Image 1 (cartoon, rainbow, N blue to C red):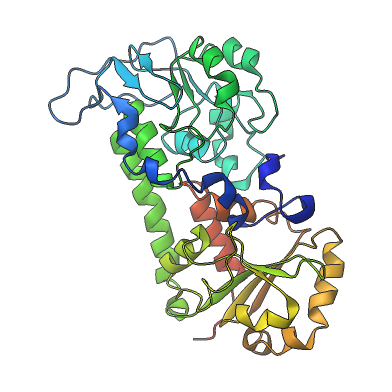
Image 2 (image 1 turned 180 degrees about the vertical axis):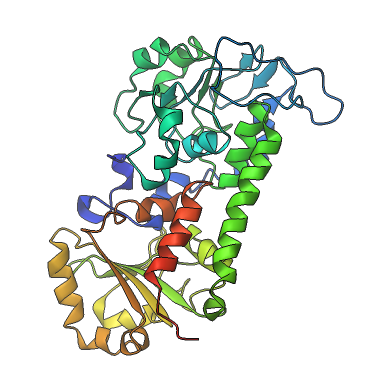
Length: 371
């Protein structure tokens, strides 16, 4: 999948790890703490009867749960739109977790920002996506005509970044679920899942999807008691020109996942974070990334990944790291099928890719950290 240009790493590198999207989210996060303010007319206590979905769109979404009241006003930074009744044909144009949340709720969207083979965690949803119109959420111009042709009655755009250009056109097609503040993104996948669930009268399914994701991660942690209290560095090797980057810096999504899996926070997680949220480390300071184990992604920066790998491997400073000496290094090369998906999953976790990422780490650390 081609990502939006804002994801590109230093000097236009084609991949980036979690902190590379910090520019997109900083400054707008606090305004999203009360995400429920995006909706009015929604009730979970003695609600008005929910509109029963008609039979014109069988199988596109599960039956309503009867807890959301319609008409439902959707508030956003671009104005309000109103859902007169429970929607049936859902168009998802955002690419920062709203698509995954919609699939996790059992919805078959009529418009989707990705194909089933774009990411490994989409594969189980091939049937749900077989009739969807695919649009590119990262294109400079949104294919509004394709969205209109799919005849949606709700457009989910919580993770779409160019609403300034197209909101007026979109609201003429269908009500739009978008963030409350312009320029902001919802950093918490649970908030996104619950918000879409409430809009579609599927709040219980949203809670179940969140619980299933948390339970999967807890099960992986339970199966690996040897991880408890260990430290791990997730490192991207950008070669001699740029050095290496510590991905699981303080407060990052990667750190949160590792903590949920039982690992301790990296001891140097906050030491070298720059203004953009990166933790960039030069070769002479390589010891800062040392930990009980290292998950190393051979990126390459501007050059070839193999050149970056050779540059790092021949360094005495790298060879002196305790993780290297103990043989506790898991390496993923740019040729690995998961190499383009892991960075994105670390950046934007959700109900679909979190279990997949936990399983990838499970496989990568197999045989490491002897009991």
